[in-house]
Length: 109
Ligand code: 5GP
Ligand code: ZN
Image 1 (cartoon, rainbow, N blue to C red):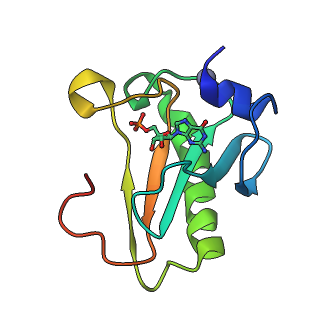
Image 2: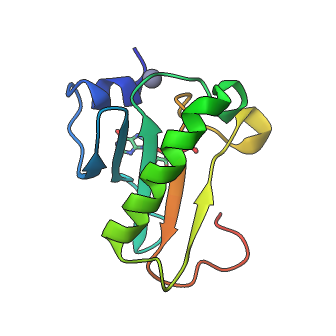
């Protein structure tokens, strides 16, 4: 079982920002900026590249709620999903990074 599936099922603790039936948002263990939250579907997909498009509809709404909760709607934020080796993906469970709380610059990393 992958590390984020273990977070979903409670085997690995996390700092939850928001959760519903299908999605989970939690703080990145190694934050790149003041705000760095990972947003995942509870169901495992290896990456965005193999995610059923219909899942993205619910995920979009959930991400918008996370941004509200983090109070970054006015200041702005960046969403990133890394895909595969060239994309720099380390954890192979689809996730979006929501980064902000300060200017993030032109590149995140
Ligand atoms: P990727 O490089 O796959 O897009 O990003 C993986 C992210 O997961 C990294 O930013 C890393 O800090 C984060 N991460 C890895 N393991 C854990 C963990 O056990 N808990 C949390 N909260 N974040 C993790
Ligand atoms: Zn997984």
